[in-house]
Length: 242
Image 1 (cartoon, rainbow, N blue to C red):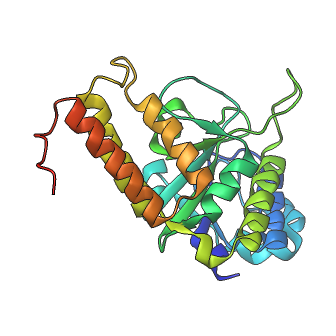
Image 2: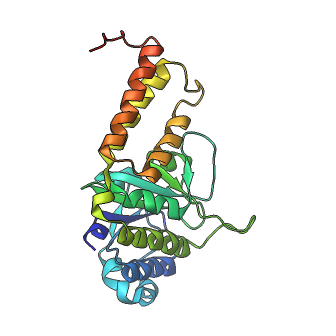
């Protein structure tokens, strides 16, 4: 699948070589080729290579970065995974929802799927650097998954969501993001957004739109609704009726 080549798996500060091997193996199983490591503590040693099996070329070609930001610099979309479900700024999605959302995008850029270390996970700052956030629901008190298992779950959902969506049903990410910029301007100007967390509503709207996969005509209707709201809210001079 050509689209799988757009994806890069980014693992921050990995601790155990065995997990690196298992990650490379599951990437090979599912057709993902690009692995990036930021500030790795784990070495690509004989133990890691022995666990990688068919994923050995992926492991041996993994690119290491000193800075987290550098690993995402060429990516148009970054999807963070975390078990820390906060309530500010970003809307959380389960893997299946995120997979269907990303399958509905038409983008030529790289897409990063980002995982934290075994002991600390991703920091709040790293999560906020990403565009979407995914969590894997589990039993209460038992929802901390092994790193390689988490990678397997998320990549599995992405692989098979991509297989099931015809190209004709995709919508360009730029179309949705352009609408969200318009929405933020209007909703801030009309006082709808909460002053203490203005991006929270936009994040929820983003998640909804990526799930719904509206076409260009439907996005146009939403733009028209915003224009009407802007007029009613006093942001625009009312235009004369044609």
